[in-house]
Image 1 (tube, rainbow, N blue to C red):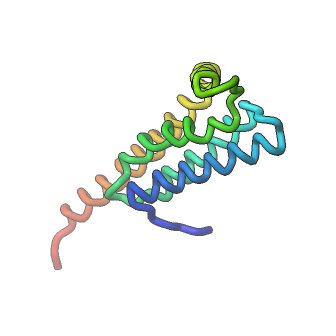
Image 2 (tube, rainbow, N blue to C red; image 1 turned 90 degrees about the horizontal axis):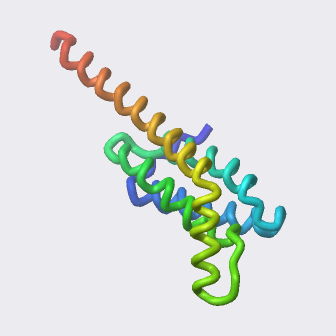
Length: 131
């Protein structure tokens, strides 16, 4: 299993690129099904939270919702012009908020678990006698 360690910027780029690719793939294969897009969003959230390096842990829950919105552009129903596309995106964000919140909560929970584990390891290392 690959174990990359992404910086905060790399984490954002990975998540945004993955969700954009999945959004286009969903549009091509399933006609822009928001449910399929939401299901595909969850593993990307998990990978983002697990692959971010320790120093940038708190960036994962921040970039995940941004990537969701960017990748939702090809999936969202759009009308004519910029206003129609924007209205379709806002509507899709409102109707798919459960996937968005669930994925963000999942990424945040994994990041917090990793952070707690890191802090416990540091505390245990300080308690050990030097020798």
